[in-house]
Length: 441
Image 1: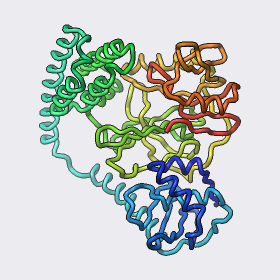
Image 2 (image 1 turned 180 degrees about the vertical axis):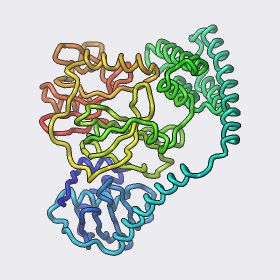
Image 3 (image 1 turned 120 degrees about the horizontal axis):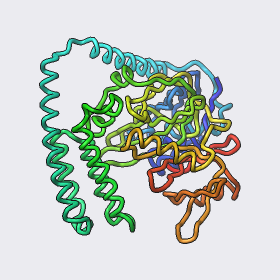
């Protein structure tokens, strides 16, 4: 099987700019030996202060190197991938050496062990009485925490929002800490996000009031959970802080088999945890899926998704009134560069209509993915940069990528993948004539 890597795709894997620069230098150097690949892996040995053995699993581009670096992937793995991207025909298809075979076998064994553990856990006898006691105790703590939150919200609104900005983050952090103690971490995280809004924009008070209203709606929905449909009840519990394990998602969620295009990816720091959001688009189903991954410090994420590539897989959605978050249950084959034209919204009216329907089903959605066809960037006087569709309707841009948008489009209409947060569009990629140009990282 020929290698189908590109330098642009490899660059998305780099943990930072310094690692990518070092990887490019290594790729162009002559320090490599025993470089080869087969259908499963790419490997090579790089001479530095020692001889480092580098291997890459081609199914998801996970890498391992014998160097002591704590970055994932390290500069040697990036260098090997960039070397293969620059000259795929120069990488011999040969039998893998023992140190590569052992690594691939261990990865397979680890995956099997993980699946066996899931199966054993599912088959293990459950102490239903103890489980019920723990659930009841948590329910009581959450009830008390939300009752205290309602009083706090009422006092906040009654005293007015004018003093909120002067009281700083401590106002929100102290209340969030109480909710963590009450085992409602989802609402605690939402409070912290609201705490970042004051003074962030001229209309910050409107945004704070809107988010407080959504929060009050959530606490009321939780109290009336028995009157909600099963799917919306799942949403409310998840937003408060109850989590589902992967095997529960697989047992209860909707499965979609498709070829999935990796539309875009964002990695953000939340306290000591890195959160990666990856948007997928089913090329046949037209469905969007959000894959969330979490990592501590510089640890690598469990799965690798490269914007601009496609892969065949079964995706399983979390139970929801508007399914969005998903996990990749089963991959089939290796990722390949995207070619073609994905389906998209004809304009912003169609997209906003879909977003409105989604909010009607699940009122606490924060982000909406889209591919909108035939749009162009334009500066609308004092309103700043917008994307304008064929009908002349415009939505504001959230980032400074308008210069790259201008350069890629040349002033002509293009298809843009973006994320809408209710106030602005965050462009993720441009898709033109089979070419994929990644924008936001």
